[in-house]
Image 1 (cartoon, rainbow, N blue to C red):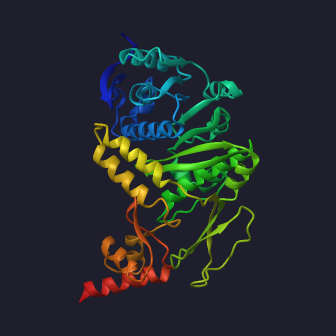
Image 2 (cartoon, rainbow, N blue to C red):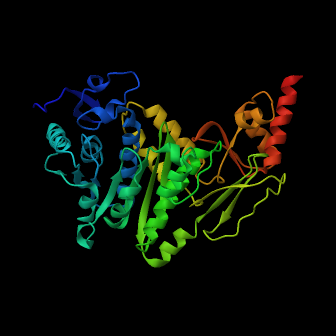
Image 3 (spheres, rainbow, N blue to C red):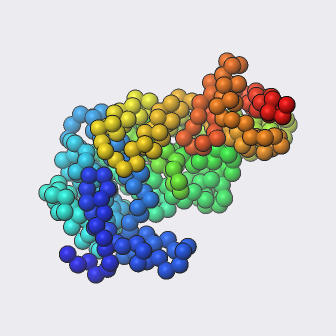
Length: 403
């Protein structure tokens, strides 16, 4: 079939798909070919789509019934067709894109993989498409919002399109606002203040989830975050929804602030959106900076991660080792304290040689505290130890290195 632009056939997961030939649209080395192609396709997001398949299968196993799933911004239909082929228990996949060429190539990819009877493709504005599923009997079990930029503009209609117990998956690629480079843009979009700290990627997830919780609460919907991750240039969160004012209130109660001292690395959480905030660091007396309001609750669930790991074991995915490593880290840090310490940042601030992450964790554990590596940062450590203990361990290790 001719699409009027250069294409190639790729294999991803268990499917074959026709996609734009991206090198055709890269005139300069700095060109971002996916956005220049007639139909959006980003090969870098394969890992994102792999995780989506695993998470959707884990969700289907949890609800234990046939499910109807949707992707309102489908591009080439890669993710949606993979859902239809690779996730058991999916009875219907409703895909949508405002681009008529996307609709054409998505329909072709569904036929190419023999799932055209299971896949429906629409050509509407994404919010209009989702709103058409807002009526009680038309609601969906899973909505996957994976835009170029922020998902906030689709969040309200995505939440309303979900049935009670359904799952929402959100990707945010606008990391500059979420990580504090464009502070005003983050406040405007996500309703919270970011900070340019060593744990800014965790803050990005918590700002995204916090925005979701507040948006859902307006419709008397509560959320339960089961999985989230930060990889490359984006953050991603998966949460189930529960209808009712009480569960919505419970979600809002998990909102709060993180107070951070850029002078001594002290940080602490403050529960509640309207809580009075400290102005001065109790550790060194410097002025405290504030991130939030944002989500202070769990951003992953151990059991859900374990189910995803089981599903991964049954599949032959190209990036299986990276998926497993990331999943294992996320499962292990699911119950860990909020924020993490960057060993390299502390060493740089104290003008010390960089200590081994493992040795620092062992030193913290020897004093009776929790110390866990994090997927957010290869040099990051999640711990309930006070800042002074962390710095003391690092300082003593550096002194030993200097002998």
